[in-house]
Length: 137
Image (cartoon, rainbow, N blue to C red):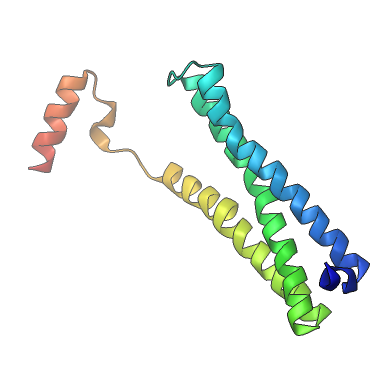
């Protein structure tokens, strides 16, 4: 505890906020398991999948923020450089949000722009499957 007491108050509060954000993230991540077991009685339903997806998505932002905030604290303590700590924490946050939110949004938009196969609009499923098989050779 002696080392923690020596930290500047700003770092103590950043660490406290990081712990709170981590707790919120863990609560959100664990909620679907309890919901599935209690409310859905273990059944795989469309409602459960939507609920689990939303809570997982909601947990990602506080988790990334918590990790980056504590990274900021550690870099500051190790390097004794406020600037390096701020740049490192911001870079890590940029990386998290880029890989977790921006890239998936880009991939989703890119896949939506792809043109459907010309035979995709053919009437019956069996006819469509036969024509697709024939078209592939």
